[in-house]
Image (cartoon, rainbow, N blue to C red; front, side, top):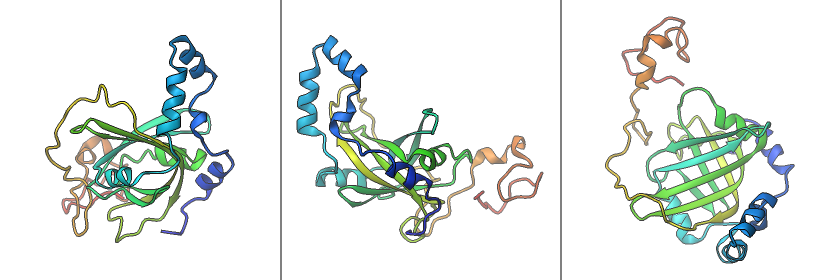
Length: 224
């Protein structure tokens, strides 16, 4: 886990000042707070709810999550938001400021990982649709090799260091119930089925790790 895939993410993040609660509000946000008379409310929320690290309750919540929305930005300031899913425990909380997120086999674009290497900045958004709870974790990220035992099925491991953590208003979170885990989520001793979209003729000749024009293997081998 300690061997780095790329030092770019770490160096980019280290070159930037750490976020603070006050940094949530740029001049444009402050102007809107003044317009709608919410500046005092915003300052009170920051004072009482924004912290650099996770509380024990927040850490427990993250450890049981099956999904997270992950926002990144590239060197040109272009944003990217993606969904990451797995089985409970796939996001590991190492301490109140550090968590790890495995990246599984995806669509091959590597937009999110590329952004992390470029800027090292991330925003994580966790939602519990059954309890109408949501949690934000903003901070820096580095890309490293995964631990095969702790992170089965992961191509790489992203380590996030939190700088701003807060859980605020639960309004507008729709109530939904969990039904079933995706069969494509890795687990110890379990080989997920291949991605169905790669079986389409459109992808002949471009499937990762296979000879050009060779159809996806009947054996169920996944693309790397």
